[in-house]
Each structure stands twice: as C-alpha cells, then as structure tokens.
Length: 73
Image: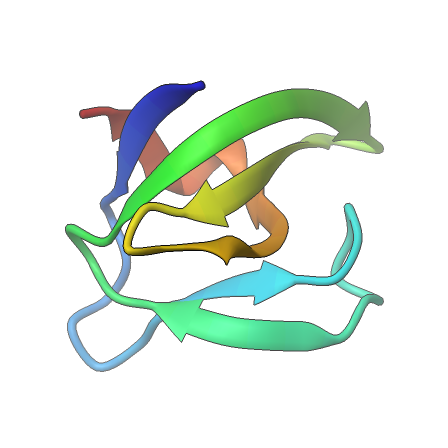
C-alpha cells in the first residue's frame, strides 16, 4: 500500500474519513493536513473518486476519503 498525505484542507477544518465511498456515509474521524494514510484502492462514485485508506499510525482505522485531498507522500 502506498503512503499518501492529506493536503488542501482549510486550516480550521479536517478531511472526513467516512465509512463508505460517499458523503452520505458516517464520518469515522477527521484528518488534518499532513496526516499520513495508506491507500488500498480507489473507486469513482459520481463525480468524486473515493479511496479506501488505513491511517498510517493506526492501521486498524480504515475508511474512505476523497482522492482530491490526498497526494503521494
């Protein structure tokens, strides 16, 4: 699994890791800029590409984030 970091999130906000690939799914946790995740796979849902990720510091914590807010680490 490749490492990516969260970027482009407003300073007073966080990237929402969700339980499924879409905004209708429950938010599991908020990730600040520079948080490192490992990408398992990505899929397109509507206009957004969602990636299934595991948190690097807590690999058991898995969910989906928008590909628009992660970049290669």
